[in-house]
Length: 121
Image: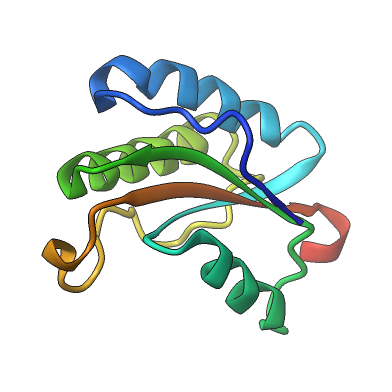
């Protein structure tokens, strides 16, 4: 299931606190992995086909036209998860690597993959 409601937009520095709270709320009963995409639905389908992890849903958190902002938000959310909820964070890399050829896209998204703790052991 992909959840597209309540997508936050705006300058990264202004919306980051809200995104951090929302991301931490997702860890209450779940493990979380933060990522970025230019095509969330396509990315969700790739994650669902992966046999490595059993993700229950993708929550699209943030949308921006700025590649720089999406990279900064991804890094900040992963850092927050690793610091505040390390057992729930499934990110290995620090994030912010960006997408190939960012000038080819006009919209970027941050998402959280959510899975049950039991299915991730």
